[in-house]
Image 1 (cartoon, rainbow, N blue to C red):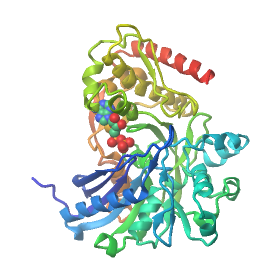
Image 2: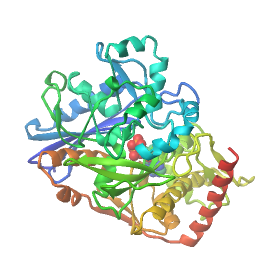
Image 3: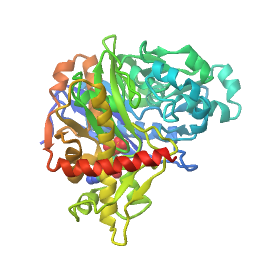
Length: 492
Ligand code: ADP
């Protein structure tokens, strides 16, 4: 039977590998969803690019496909969530990007970050972030230095910068609105997270003119309307939020004693810290969202390679045909047979921050099987999560009672069970699988009075629970893996 609805909230989930448009009703039920993958470009080792025009074309295509299937009179608002940090510069005269977008995973500015290392402590203090190629600032700088004839256009105020949210909103509004929300802005390395505004000394350090930058708005609020010439009807844009913060809003809301991990391309372990940022030497402090005039913060462990390691097994090693078959392969043997994997395929992010690190397979013998390598790869996702959670526990006073898991890889029962064992903590998987899109819908729906923060938080319920089975054994193997990582980093 088709799901009924009185009101509809639309969401655009603009991810790293594809764009999705979704329609939810007032009960948080999914009515329709359309998805389109886009091309990944790897022009050099460690470099990752997207075609921002292709991202726009596929966004519009999935949005229109959803609009065709619903009663558009019921639409109350549109929420946008997106891959963060990915950097687009475009020319407002032509409406076209001046270069391919530089993706968050791209390491091309590693050397530039090294030359700025004396500024790292000030940058951490102001932005909550590490001086790392992951964030937008050095990517913008790189584009300004490498795109021919761009300086003249910048001087004439013809160039704009945006993360994917800004770029898509600019296109959706027919070039009228150049904005970003506080959560996305906090990932640029240009924003002082204590004030939520751009920091002029950081703009100077990275040589970035202010005329390039979008206005920072709240994560929930009616901030723009789409151009009917583009989208067919005018849609109120009422929510904008970065993808990990969106999943955090769905999973944890404002509850500071909870923690979520999204098992997607990367792993993003995030916990809300309320109205104050917490300091950590190994984790990122970030703006979670800006709501009703107030900034809320989160502590985040960003792990660059999660499900991407499974894609690597499939696309490069070709030892699996689908991600789904890893579950069965991992349980062919009842232990890891001494095989360990350090998935530093684009350096190591949290909590190690070692951009020079490279991947390592350890403990191989003549008898090592494909199943052993698959299992070691899955286990490495759980070990990386434990390394981050150990850091979080040092900083937050109250212990967590469970880990709230979401993302594509939560379908893997072996991984979820092993995660529960390594953490010695229950792992809960929610009924709503689209936690990222749903968080954006939440921001959009709260802005138009469809939900309150409280009523929205009740829509997400737990579907599956994993409880610890054999923590001592998982703890022992974690210690071996951790020693290997520490040794490798010392030698990088
Ligand atoms: P993203 O939003 O980052 O594109 P998703 O949340 O859609 O990622 O999850 C996709 C990731 O999950 C892929 O990297 C894929 O390898 C991984 N994945 C999907 N299904 C499984 C599975 N059954 N076991 C392990 N990993 C999986």
